[in-house]
Structures are given as C-alpha cells and as structure tokens.
Image (cartoon, rainbow, N blue to C red; front, side, top):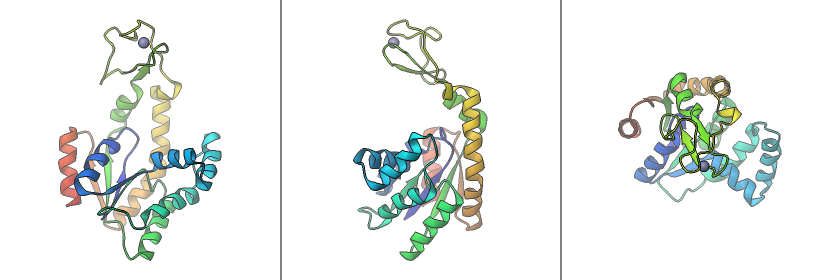
Length: 212
Ligand SMILES: [Zn+2]
C-alpha cells in the first residue's frame, strides 16, 4: 500500500500520519525528518541538500527524489506513507515512474483541507520565553498573563516568520506549488479530500474510511 499525505504546514498531517502508520503497519517517511537525518549523517545526499538549506533555498527535485527512491524499495512493513513528498508535479511524476518500474503505484493521495484563516490561527499564535525557552500558543497553550512567561514573568517573543503576514506568505508559496500536485492525483482518480478542521478523532475516522 502506498499512501501520500498532502496538506499545508499546520494542517495536522504529522499527527495523523503517526496514528495511521501504526494502525496499518506502514513505514512513515516524513521528508523533513529524512532530510535532517541525511544532513546529520553527512551522506552525499545530505551534503547536497545542506548547501541549499543553508542558503534558505528549497532542496531541488532531483535531490528529494534521490532520497525517497532509495527508501521505496523493500520496506519492512505493509507499505509506505509519504508525508511531505511530492511537493511539486516533477516530484509526483518521478514518484510515479519509480513506482511503475517496480510494478506498483500510489493507492491514495489524501489532501488535508484547512482554510487559510484556520492555518494562520494555528501557525501564527506561537511565542516563546527568551529566558527559559518555554513555548506558548495564543489558542492552544496560552500563558496565564498575556505575553508573559508563567515561569519567569519574562516578556514573550514572537519569531518574524510566525507573524500572520509571514505565515500568509508561506502558505501562498505552498499553495502555488501544491495546487498542480492535487490536480495530478485528481486526474488519476486517486485524490481524497479530508476536512482537516474537524476534531483529531473525526479526521482519523475519515482517513480510515479513505484508506480502506
Ligand atoms: Zn520563561
């Protein structure tokens, strides 16, 4: 079984991926984690990726594809759950090619649908204490006194890229890149949309129905 998870940052893919992978005995390939592991191991791929990441650039398709390809072969499980890949149509096509060479294909591509306003609410509310590094969130984990650390009463700080405008920009980039990937799977009859604004349990049961 090969499942692809698609959705913006903050859409809740990671949480659901862990549960579904455990339930269905799938190997969970989260590309962010894989990249960090390759970089930490100092592999050829890791070094190539690091050069781009250090400049703040996206890791190019061929590096990402190389990293995923090696892991598609003989997983020690009942299948693979891809989380964070493919991000572009070139990556989706390369994935199709690699799979068809192995006589298989993507079974389901699941899109976590969450409105931009909700994503901004989830992503933009973060703050941290500069003193003890404790993390807060305006909605999910607010401090007792506004913008003050519960432990040391220090004023909380917000990272530039966690501010609403920066978050909206990041989401625009994501959307521009990913809309054609959604079309790619929709045209292949493999796309399933799941309402990602429901409770974690409701999303989980929709996923179970989608995956079968
Ligand atoms: Zn503190």
